[in-house]
Length: 164
Image 1: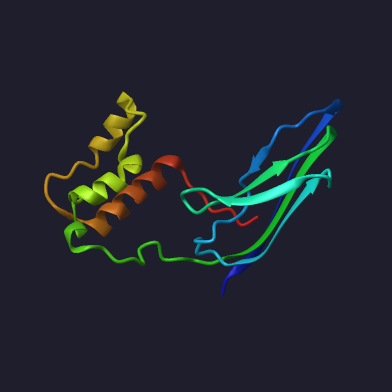
Image 2 (image 1 turned 135 degrees about the vertical axis):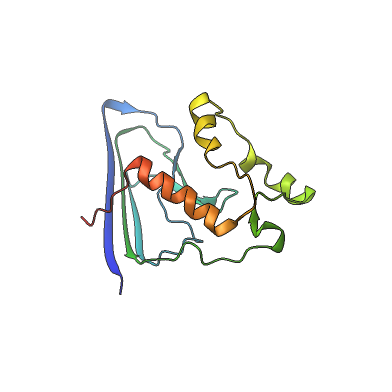
């Protein structure tokens, strides 16, 4: 049995006088590919005189592009989501034969497609030292490797479940 939750978010801006507001992009809608069941979603924008165009980014996330034709004195964005908090097994996936053990190598085409995700932008000394703990001297089952990373993160960032 799952717990149903409601998330209510409001962002509000009040200006001293009427101002021209340039287009805004709102990224406050659950992705369609989320495994969390969404019972309802609402987005309310003030002022009522606006145009909204829904788009998706390359990763399948929803974007609401807002255009305000007139000057405004107040901008309010209100979002409500009602969703199930269901326990989901994060290891419910298939692994290709070549990736059953870590470390593994992607084939050339897949490596090219994954290039944006494999790029290391921040390569500071502290990160490099942390990553050394995960260098394998021998092959390790990929699920065991992922569990080890997640357990390490859980211990180091002091993750706690809050039910409120």
